Length: 260
Image: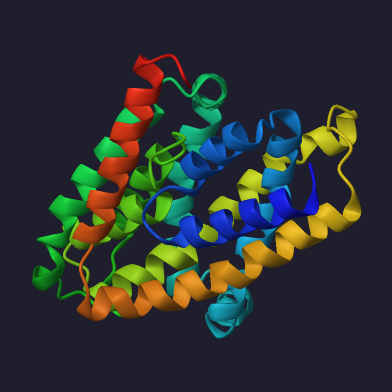
C-alpha cells in the first residue's frame, strides 16, 4: 500500500462515515479497486480512529459534559443506544465478518439503504422532539438500527438518522444523537479490530502511510459532520438515496458479469 492509496481511502472513510452512504461499503469497494485485502482491513482501524477524532472535535463540549456526569440523562441515553448495537455486533460477529469478506450482498445493501433514506426523508417535517425529549425507548430503537448497520453497505449514519426521524425526533436533535452515538460504536469497532495488533496477524504497514490515511480521515470526517448537520436543517436525503441506488446497481451489474 502506498501513501496515495492511504489518502484516498482516508478521504473516502472520512466522508462516508458521516454521510448516509456507508463507509464500510465504500472502503470495501476501495480495497477491491486497489487490490488490497488484509492490509486494507488493517488500515480500516486507523481510518476509523480518524473519524472518531473528527466527531469528538465537533462535539467536544458535549462529550466533556457526559464524562463529568456519565449517568446523567445524555449518558444514560448513549448507554441505552449502545447496548443493542453491541449485542447485535457480538452475537452475529462471525456472520457479519463472513459477509464482509465475500461482499456478496453489498449491492443489495446499498439498495436497501437508499430505500430507508428516501422513506425517512418524508418524516423530516414531522419531528418535534428536542434533545431533552429523546426517551430511552427512542435510544434503544436507534441503537438497534445502528446494530443492523454492521452489514458492510448499510449506512450507520443513514440508519440512525432515519430511526431518529421515525421516532419523531426533530432534524437537529436527530443529527446530534446519531453522531454522538457513533462515538462508542466506532471506538468499540476499533477495539475489536485491534486484536490483530496483539496476535501478530496484522500485516506490516508503514507509519507514514497510516498517519496520512488517519489525518485525511479526520479532516474529511470533520467536514462531513459539519456539512451533514447543516444539510439536515434545510436539505434532503433523497440525493443520497439516489446515489446509493446507483452504486448498488453498478455493484450488482459487476457481480453478475463476474467482474467483481
